[in-house]
Picture 1 (cartoon, rainbow, N blue to C red):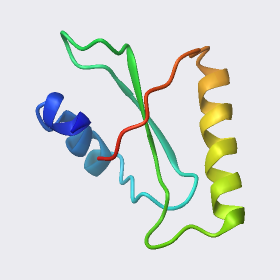
Picture 2: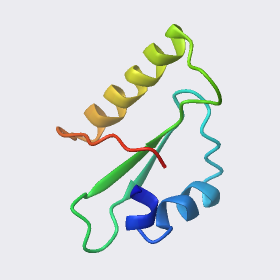
Picture 3: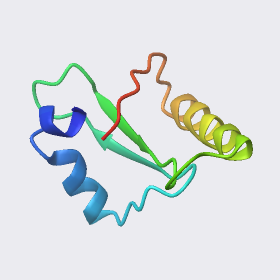
Length: 79
């Protein structure tokens, strides 16, 4: 849904930056023109079912990325 709204820009950025979606991998992408979001964080969750440790790693990666960029609000969406 998010990539469709961004007219494919998120998928294009992920491909250009070799974002594979592995657990806790983070890619920061500027929000598209006209978007309600200044920054979009793509966060990998790996493939298949997440183990408890993977959930913890992913949550930590989200918090660290948001803190580093002084982001205070998050919307979570599947890409």
